[in-house]
Structure formats: structure tokens, C-alpha cells
Length: 505
Image (cartoon, rainbow, N blue to C red):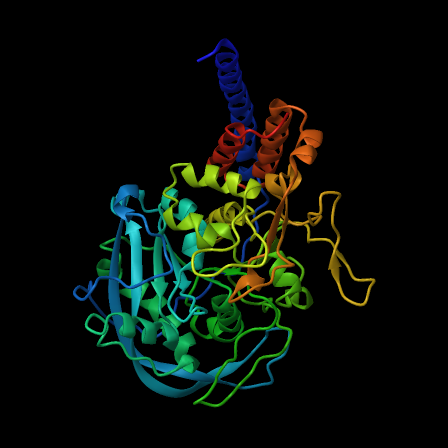
């Protein structure tokens, strides 16, 4: 190795140590600042009252657990176990008692009933001492025709390192149909009566976690059970929150991720068709917390802009700058992200050299490579704080929207990134323009947003030296961590990835 190269390596190592030391000091302050966030409490919910289904399992046989849309690394390598259970009972559909209004203060009553048998997939800490007492129940997403777990994919780093248990429930018929087609031996017993019954099935799945914890959680005792869902599942969770949660009091809190405008039908064919209004707010009298996270795509392309509502004692809305409904992390990098830091470096590099889509389809231009998953990690942390201690998540500014023209449009900064919202270093110290809009192509491409990397000339103008870039990135990362929007562990990986890059000079 030549003298000049050795000097460069040593200089970068020295810079990395200095930057990490600075970040450590700032992030220590960030942890302290987060601990003093004003606490807000919500009404103490009554005991969950959904019917308790019959639980069988753990299920074995066939080809093993069929859940295509989840992480692909060995959970045992991070101290987790996985198992699967069937649960069965009689589910109700629901009918409105009064008109369903946009305020979400809906009154519904059980209507028809039907038998069902569905499944849940369970990830939990192998060591009971690692369990933090909270079970995340995800409404599995069936947009692609099979069960997928996008919220697990987006935020599994936080769930694993903090010791959550996670349960994915096949609440809708499409997931069951796909599982039976993939493995008719293992899933022969499953039977779904239709999505009008999905809400009560989801309630009964939560009740099973409580009543059959010894079986489902291997003896772990849940203290809190929260519900989550992304995209299509978020639309259904919105209807669940406004219509069904007040009847069952099944869940202690909700994370509603990327729902778009409106919500799913309360009932549908072959039962009575009961659509919900075009604009739907979360009811203000729910009694348990709701944290909603929205991307640029959700606001503009999927219509959430009309459904915005103000923060309150039981509600928080985080609109995330530089993010899209789906992105490179949830479709590619998150599949193998085992928390080692490799995916963080890959994610940074992807902003400089973005892909045009995940395996299976190609979009017209490179897809979004932003940092939504770090914000989702924080959302998981804060929802748990909210339901266990009453400490509410930080309030966030809205994404800036210009409504003076014929159609609303985001207000963009000099680099083409949206202003306002929950920020990450990817938009505050950018190496590319990140957007949730402007994509075209086949399949689901319109949900994947775009990435436009900066030219070498622009990067050099913005960041004359690597030290200048890394210092700015580190300070912004620490600032967002201090605000509560990036977890300290993620902040360290973000700083390490930037420090290892060649950006600057």
C-alpha cells in the first residue's frame, strides 16, 4: 500500500472515530430528551371482549410455514423462534346502526355469522427474558394475492432488538386461498367465509393471543397487544378502529401505516354491500392510541390529503418526507436485513445507484431508496411507549403542500425534496432527490416513487470534502434522533454508512 493510500485510510478511520464520538454524545442527549417528552394518557380501555377461538398447533407438516412476504434470514440467528397456529370459531359480519359519517363515530352491530378456520404466524424471542411484554398483531396484507407482512419487513430491526413478539394473522380470504394453493396438505383445514367476517376474525385472533398465550407464545405473558397494518390492511384497520374496536376493546393501540384516503367496506358481497365514506377520520373517542404514518404517495396518489386530521391526546400523524408507499427496503433490502449493518450500507449506496424495481418487474425510472424504515422503527418504539407508559410520540409538522393551484402540489426545496414532515438525513443532507411520486411502469410501480441521484458535480459543490459531508450527515442524524424520529441504534448505523461512503470532495 502506497504512502498516500495509507494516509487516506488513516484519515478516514480518524474521521470515523471523531464522527462516531460526536454522534454518541449527541445521541446520549437524544435519549435523555426523548425520556422527557410530555406524557399524554388515554382512557383505560375495558377488558377485551371478543369471542375466544379454538387454537390448534403448533402446526407441522407439508412444506413448512407459507408466508412469502416476510424476512428471509434465519430468525434463530437473531434469537427468535417462529411457529404457526390455526384458530377457528364463528365470526360475525357487521351492519351499521346509524349512518357512517366522516367523523368516524360509527355505530355498528353484529349481523350474519359464519364458521371459519384461519392461521397465525408467530415470531417471538427464544429467551423469555428478552420479551418486552408487548405483542404486535399485524393484519397480513393480501394486495399481491398472497399473505405478506410489510410492517414486520419495514420495522423488524426495532421489533427484534426491543424484544417484541409478533403475530401475523390471515384475516382475509385471499391469504387463505393462496396458502391452500401453495400447500394443500398443510393448509387443508383452513376455511374462510369472506372478507365481511375479516374484522371479527381479526378480533378473535387478538383474543386468542391473550387467552391462549401459553400455547401461542410459548408461555410468555402479554401485557399489551397492539394492532398494525400497512396499505390495504391499513384501509381495513381504519374501518376496524371506527366500527369494531369500540365493541370489542380488543387492542391496546394501533399503528396504521400508509392507508390512503377513505377506508375498506364494512361489509361486502356476498353479504350486504356497506361502503364507507370517501373521507374517513379516526374517531376521537376511541380510548386507545392511534399512530398513523403516511408517505408522499399516500397523501397525493392515494388520497390521504383529504383525510388529514389534527393531532390530539389519542392521535398522532407522521407524514414522512422523501418516502413512497413501497420502496427498495421493503421489497429488497429488508428481506435479508439481520441487523448487522450491511443493509444500512447497502441502503446508502442504493441512493447513489438506485435499482429500477425489485425482482419480478421493472419500473420506468429508479425506485425510491429513502429511509422510511428508520421512521417506522421509531413508530414501533413510540406506540409501545404510549400504550405502556402513556408517553405520547412527538408531534410532527405536516409535509408542505401548495393548494393555491388547480391541484395540490408539494412544496419542494432547492434539491427537489419535499419540505416539512418527519425528516431523515436522506432529505436534509441529500445525495439524491427522493420522491413518492412520478413513477410509471408495470404492476405496482406507481407505488414505488423515484430516486434521482445527484451528479458528481453537484455532490462536490454541496460537499467539498468527505469530512464536510459526514459532519453534516451526523449532526442531522443526531438532531432527528433527539426529536424522537430516529432510534439511537439506527442513528449509529446511519452515521457508519455515511462515514464509509466516498461522498464529498
